[in-house]
Image (tube, rainbow, N blue to C red):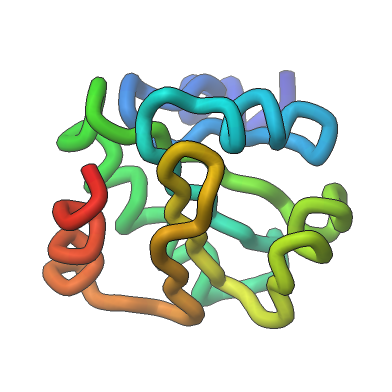
Length: 120
């Protein structure tokens, strides 16, 4: 466990985005019964950190209605390649294994919530 994990608790609260990898992408995203949001990000991307904060705020509101995941594109290149992610932050929203919405770049909280409400 790293220093930041020790300071900030290490595990996401219920509903907050959970880190996934290429290896478990299909299991967690494509086979999910609930709609899924995947946040494609990288540690060096400042707008990604802003988006991450928005998703941590929104995620608990969608508990039991939508799953929130985040995937580091530097450590996991396969899923971004398969889904044509060429810039970050990028959000893909899946329903029954199909992409039903895509958000490239930052989006303010209210319009982001409106887009999620259409799917959840």
